[in-house]
Image 1 (tube, rainbow, N blue to C red):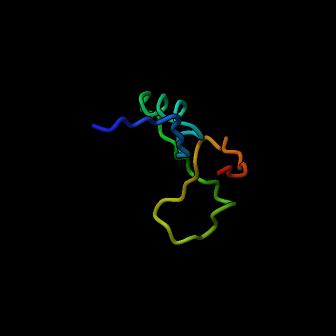
Image 2 (cartoon, rainbow, N blue to C red):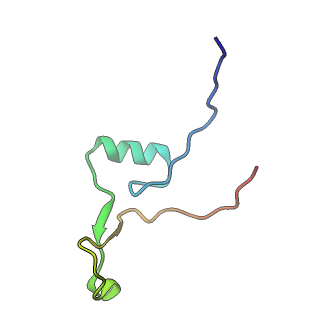
Amino acid sequence: MPIIVVPRMGAVSPLGANVGISWSRLLADQSGIRRLPGDIVGDLPFARKSQTAYPTFTRRPILA
């Protein structure tokens, strides 16, 4: 049987910008979605208008 090694895990989700934060918020039954303020969405024809609750993501260059 081959040995598989996963050195790191990453996740960017509405719950957070890394696995640890996302997992702890998921286990705490927290939602990552909040309603958008009316001045942002105006009259958009969507039943639900929302954004992530934890805007902590910082864009970084991808290193390969």
